[in-house]
Length: 278
Ligand code: KIV
Image (cartoon, rainbow, N blue to C red; front, top):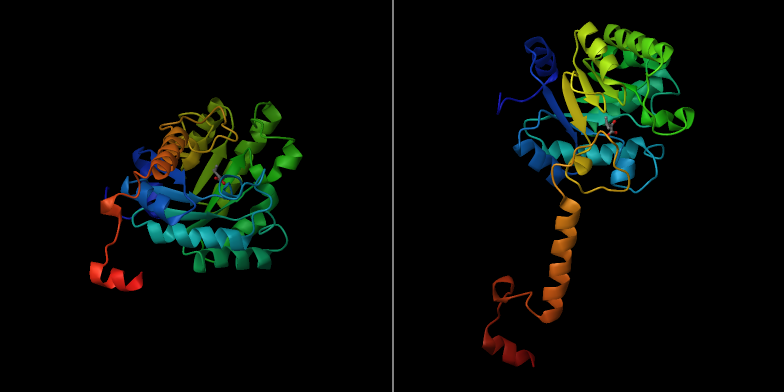
């Protein structure tokens, strides 16, 4: 499937065939292009950009306009990957009309292929409306960061029988409402396994263990370039923090010693012209 565009039906086919779906976040053109060239299946323009790109302490301040700005950049960089844009806090909570308008703007102006939004039964009417407007939707259950003030912090969800049953029921409700995949964040592996078995649509896990139908990570976490907060479920495949700091120190040092810029980085002018300028 290397060069074939990844679509909603690729998500569903992958589930049928038992093939794992890869997803990473991306917030800008050049990173999206690199991840796409590495053949990632899907790129999520997550509202985590509020923390990773904008330096907020959580995702609550991110606006629809912020999302559109970053979605535009990522969709310009992605040729093969399916691009999904997050619906930020309060963009799907006020009314159904407002929700469709916001989802539509993220698709139409942001150029992404689908939207993702957090929550279960409490947003089911909004999900149905977006699906009815022909916009593909991904659900998000478990630790839903926009509800951080209700959860009282970034905590694993679904550990008690009551919580776990609620998440299973919500997953079934979301499937019935027409979402084509569900992100399961920070839930116990055993619970994610049950949900993944019960659903016909794929689950994409983050901190939800290996039985999900795919995995997503924040690219900056996986690449080791965002260290304000590194959750237990992150595996760092590179240490770009050190690489970036090392390169920056070399640049400063070479520039101060006069080693950079060298001849090959410099433009010349005819001596005759130059003399006239003195
Ligand atoms: O905003 C985000 O990046 C997300 C993923 C972590 C799933 O929702």
